[in-house]
Amino acid sequence: MKRPSHEKTVSDSESEMVQLVLPNDTNLLGNLLGGTLMHWIDLAGAVVANRHCRQAIVTASMDGLDFLAPIPLGSLVILQGKLKHVGSSSMEVGVQVYSENPLSGKRRQTSTATLCYVAVDKQGKPLPVPRLLLTSDQEKRDFEAAIQRKEARLLRLQQKSLRQKTSKREAE
Image (cartoon, rainbow, N blue to C red; front, top):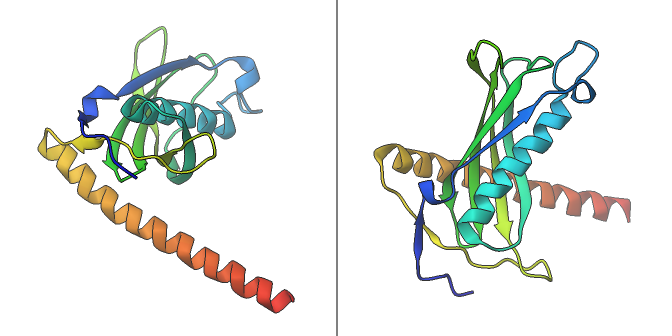
């Protein structure tokens, strides 16, 4: 798998998406449904990953999603995505979510999420992605922290696979 020779910066693929919370997006308390927000987060993250590699991508995992505050009906939802790490075919994207009162302009952070995407061909096989050129100390810190998350994610998947194999053997 030959990696593209060019590098891209974090800012090359950053994305901001804005949604309006409508009545069909809310729960019985008049706040945005968690599942709807998860969908929007996945879309915002996928735009970032696609902009980086310009290939078909799939969501491999959502490592973390923290709901910090509810988002009421009528709010604007601002989703800001940026790359944190790039492997040979995988890309970790962080998405910050804010709610904004459309009348006052008051904004507050409501959620954070970390997702992993993989570039794939038409058969679903991983494809190489461009390297990430880090241009700030914060990007370097984010990249290092993402390496730790990637190692934990791979270990978790390895353990899950082992448990599934053990359960399968016990069932036979």
